Image 1 (tube, rainbow, N blue to C red):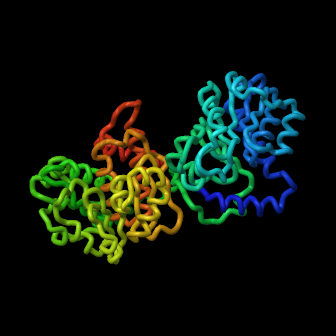
Image 2: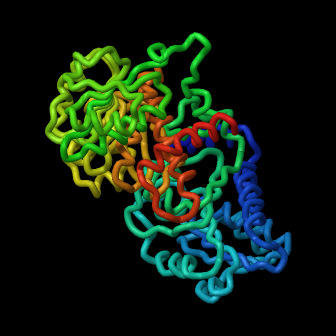
Image 3: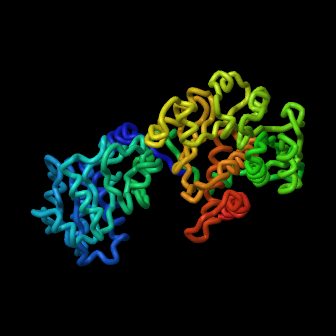
Length: 479
């Protein structure tokens, strides 16, 4: 599992480790890893032209020491000093190795093969300072590969927010631990490819991170697998309350997502014509006209996709099994109704729905996804899956690590994909996964299926995603 820690935690760990090491050893470890990453990004080091954008913090020192190492490999290295001061040891090392300080930063950038962004470090807030903006723009407008030192300058390490101008990197080399902002949009878009350099922090970092991201082996371990003694009821039955005369397809897609999710059976509850559409598409579905309480035993409910003003939300919330609420089910949802439940609840809003639940604007939610998902989980006492360019999952109450989904793709921004996700997550709930695991595993498989369905940069449909879920499942369990 990939884990990320807030700035305060990383700095405390660094201080503890530095107390055990010779002076400057930690920065040298970082610089060595940074230089190695740069060498891998250059077609050849000897004769290449490297420009260092150097701020006054330790990130500037990392860049300077890395530049000195590249000089010893035959690169030409020029530093552009942008802070009120430069790291003395790093600047001395650069000059001793034959590097120089630019008189004209734009002339140096115009011919650069690689630019190291060491303008601001993990403590930076509020975007780039005005004097750094034109230089950052020139770096991004050049033909050079831009490599961020620890974090792209101008983004918030803890929240992923970008409040002002930031320098978009092709790659980010981060030290000791990932920072939450590297895994959460909008900052994630600025980071490019990520590389983590081990500087020895693992021994002193807390065991519980602030943010985490599942990987294939984590998902494979969590996926429900039938045993020789399994039958369809032991594997779990998920109930789906979805669809309406206006949106019958939402029910079909939610059911299809559920059928691919590992539960033994799916019960659809809804109006006759929609039930007919479900049966026509998926004859294995158990269909009932309702109400949900009379439909038969289930281990989890999914309510809301395409429901419109139809009934069923209150009935499902009154049950004693896990419930996933999506789409129309979220409209006018009261925190008290969720907190009063004795069984777990999962909410799956997109940014607009989250904004309505929080009484905020969509823009506020999208700019501060981590804060929004934690606040929703705390306010409703529910596990919350916040859909978006970075899908985030937070456990009930808002405590513990938030999970960032690493498998999403922009092609998922298509009608009905959220219905598939809801059915898939509900099926995993019915199969016995804990709410946090069910939601994050569903998001992972959903994104992976979309990537697999997109064999070329071309549009896909929600149904393409659903039909590719078995292939995504296979990829995870056989890798």
